[in-house]
Image (cartoon, rainbow, N blue to C red; front, side, top):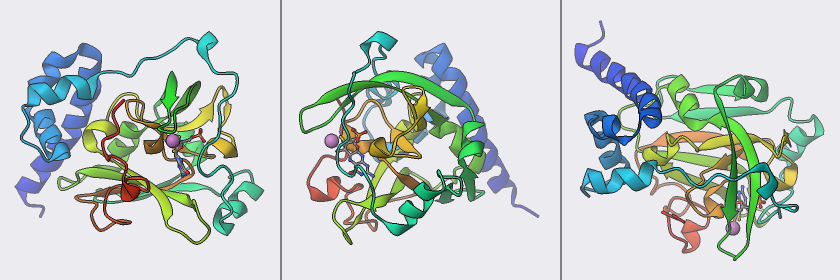
Amino acid sequence: MTPPRRVSRRQFGIRGLQLLGVSLLTGCDALSQSSWFAGLLERAEGLTRAVQKAITPRLALAREFAEADRSRVFPGNGTVDPSEPDYQALTGTGFSAYRLEIGGLVERPASFSLAELRSLPSRTQITRHDCVEGWSAIAKWKGVRLAALLERVGVKPGARYVVVHCFDALREGGEKYYESLDLGDALHEQTILAYDMNDHALPVTNGAPLRLRVERQLGYKAAKYVRRVELVERFDTIGQGKGGYWEDRGYEWWAGI
Ligand SMILES: Nc1nc2c(c(=O)[nH]1)N[C@H]1C(S)=C(S)[C@@H](COP(=O)(O)O)O[C@H]1N2
Ligand SMILES: [Mo]
């Protein structure tokens, strides 16, 4: 028999996700009254910072643009053609054998083909990508909401961060690219794993077949060539412990724009 406490916690989590979805449409008030969300933000940030201070900026949408604002050229940056053999094997078949894996602190570890990902709740948005190197570009992105995926697999109560692992290393044989978000950003309405860019399948240059879009942070958070998503309580044992490839090399973990 399942202990009653576990059942209620789990139901709480599912209800919380539904609540979040509804509240994003109805505004901040209902959400700020949700102790589940308040608790989530505190856990996600590991801070006792006043919730009212945390909530507004965390829920705000990044600016969205019109079709006509899209950049004629959207550069590729960092890795633009992963040389890793397991990635090359996938490009050879048009990514038909690709599966996104989701594991770690989830109730139901799973993997998803691109067709399955395309059948889940999606979002389309035209946003501006800002790279720390000093360039910006606007594109239209369509992808599965990370919140929808997390709802599918069920987030365990101890989970605090979503880590995204990629196929590529920037130097041959070097550390693989990775990034991490707290649950507040992972569940944000505009946080998607994008499979389309400007109405076409994402090109290899920009992260095929799947890349993260996290629109209120700098470009290096937007991990390309996503292979695996892992829910963790802490990330200090991953990579060099700072939560991302560039964070391990001195960039900020919270890269708000
Ligand atoms: N896997 C992976 N993701 C990555 C990078 C990378 O080198 N590898 N570079 C990052 C940086 S610094 C930027 S600015 C953007 C570039 O995305 P783009 O190639 O679509 O312009 O991807 C980010 N995500
Ligand atoms: Mo960047």
